[in-house]
Structures are given as C-alpha cells and as structure tokens.
Length: 435
View 1: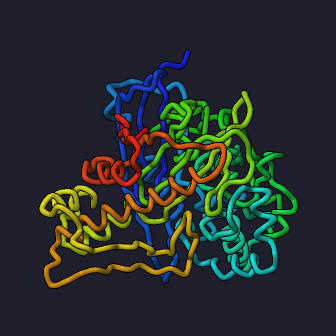
View 2: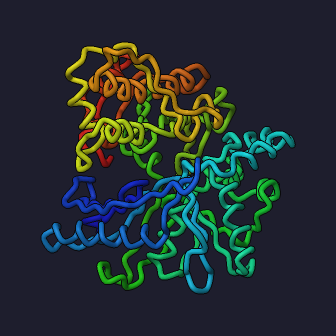
C-alpha cells in the first residue's frame, strides 16, 4: 500500500520536490533554482542538463528533510509546451530547451496560418497556431539537429515531462503524458494520439516522438539515481496547470483555477472538446482509466515575470520574490495614480494572441512614485486574468462562479484583493501554493 509519494515539479524558474502522504499532506519540501536565458529578442532558452541536475538537487533536499521516510512512488508535474531534443542513443541534449514563452517561430506560425493551416490545427487540437505551443519549436530543434549532422533516426523530441521520464528511467521509457501532448499542436483531441495530418503540417516524423500515455498509465520505474533507488514506480505524470486544476476540487461546478506563476493559466473543466470562444483554448485536462477530461483555458505569458521585472526596475531586494517587493511598496499608495503597465514582453497571450504587441508603461507624471509603479504592476496581472475569465465565461458550457488561486504570487494580499474586485467573484487562495 502506498504510504508516501514523492512529487517532482519542474517549473520555469525552479525545480521543486515535495514528499506527501497518500492523503496529500506535505511532509517535506525541497527546491533548486533554474536559470533562464534570453539570447535574442523573443528567444527564451533553458539548459536540459541543468533541468535534470536541478531536479535531482530538489529531490535530495526534500528527502534530506523527510526524517528518513522513503517514497513508495514518484509523480511528475512540469512546465508545459517547452521542448527538449536529445540523442536517442547517448541521451545528450541536441540544443537548448526552447521555453514555452519562446517566440522565435512566430514568422513560421504566421506563414502556416496564411496557408490555411490555422483552421485545421484549431479544429483538431483546440489550440491557436501560436509559437507558445510545442510543434513549431520541435521543428526548429529538429532542423538544427539535422544541420549539426545528427541522423534523423537518432533525434528524440519531447516536452519536459518526456525528458524527465526518459532520464528517470535511464532511457527505458520514451513517452509523453496525454495532457502535455495536447499542448503540442500535434494531438487530436478526439483520437487522443499524434495525428498524421498535424505531423505533416509541421514536417515532423512520428518516430521522433514518444508514445502518448494516460496520465495515470504508469511511466516505468526509476534507474539507480543515487538520490533515489532503482525500481521506484513513476506512477503518474500531469502538466503543472492541469495538476492544479485537479488539486482544487475540479468537479465543483463553476469553479475555475488560476495559477500565478511565471505566466498564468486560467482553467475550468468543460464537458467536451467542442468550440471555445475566440482567444480561448480547449485542452485535454487529463486522461485516466475513467476516460478523458477536457477544459477551457487561457494562457497569460507574463504575470510573475512581470512582477519580478518591475521589482528589479525599482531596485527591490533580489533575494525576495517580486510580488513581495511590490506588495510592500504598493501599500504606500491607494491606487496606481493613473499608471498602466501592459507587460507584453513576448507579445500578448490569451485572449488577444497578439505576438506583435510590445510592453508599454504609460500614464506617468512628475508625481508618479515607486508605489504607483508597484501597484500598476500588480494590477496588470489582475487585469490580464480578468480578460481571460471574461472571455471563457462568454462562451457556453463553462460558467465561472468562483476562482481558486495558487502559485507564488498568491502571497500578495494586494494582488488577490485586486483580482476579486476586478472579477466581481470570490477568489479563494489555496492553502498550499504548490497545489
């Protein structure tokens, strides 16, 4: 009988691990920061080897504080849409990890839309043909690997969950969890497998992708990793936003979740993979033995990252989260004094999907203070979430009556209150930010 589960969460800026009881109570935590690089405008990269070493460091820190308790099973949660390419025989990365915020393929996506593929892709996948999603990034990495002399049959492509499972199992399992697969632009939402027509749109071979597995379908067992013993079952995999939706009592009618991370995800279950309002995605929430669950979702590209940016610009303590710095400053002003921040550092995500948009800070006067700027940044996050909530609620089948919030920025009472005020709906903050 399973007594303790080690849950690994690979986010954008941190790798985290928590040891939980079977009932979900957290026994111990560990984390390790992750680097992120911006080598060119709209390029966002990470290092696959660093992701792996940070994961192991987080696991070590967690188990070191667990008082000798040993997990019976392992579960994985991960940042979505980011793409890894690696060598099938050696396991070596074949380039940088292209982050979910990366926009280098915007021109490619625009050409595909102009050629009429946008309608086909949205009809099959529920997603807009946008560079946030994985397939165009996969093609970029595939072409780069070929140009570097790698044989096509030696190229593996996957989302971060696929890379972690490969590493955890010593290369024995090459698979992608179904919910993660649904974020690639390559999975048919009805057939729940890679679709040949979608692979053809992006010029990707089926052989370069792993098997699509159910979220609770089992992902092999661990190899001897030092910090973990061999033979530990990798029992389940679920993308981070999907995990949060599951954690918040997803079966409650009208309850949506908002995750305040580097970006933000607004998500609520819906009955079927039918048409969503403009600017909103339909996605596979998870696939279990009971069948598929679908959700409406809107993705915001810059929320926590917008807070961190403003905190840095204002000279905040670099050892403190941006939201904490700004909340303290914002307490010194009753409002933003007319200052408005549009944090379109990589364009705008849902519901606007305008990759040509650029960041704007406006409304400043000679009387503008640091407190006004801090409040403007907090309000920018709240306004973006409100845009998405209203867009989701404008369509059928997914009424939103209350919000459950998780993620680091929920520690800001000012942000949470601004969010509730803008939405005119209750906002309930999760007891554990890692939900």
